[in-house]
Image (cartoon, rainbow, N blue to C red; front, top):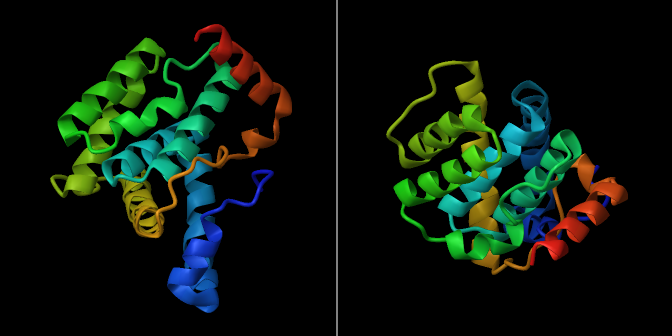
Length: 186
């Protein structure tokens, strides 16, 4: 689906057992894929990145942040203002500071409409907010789903970044262009 085998899968199987992992994926992945269609890939990966940073999971934060980078470059033909390789320094930030940093990046990217999603995501994570509509119900599902994956990754010590967990990861031209633009900005 994404052009690679995520290194998290063996940790999920070890934690849940083979049958439990199959049941968990069968219960969560179809809804996740529909959420990507309904909310959009960029919004879904933005939520995944914020949820994972909040939960202290660098592995998942990178996978979603990198997907967001590639999608942004493909769709807007310019470099996303955040390099997913820098997210390690964002782990453990207090929720308000995390929200502010992500919102600053979104404003720099011209994605002001997404800023409210950051506050909503943090509110759902922190328990200050309950979903009020269908889109927020989808977001609440992402909070639960990624929360499970984040806990497993953190407990397993799975921190080494993988690849973008999105079909755009198979687009070699976008990946090469992103890398070239990043290297030119170093």
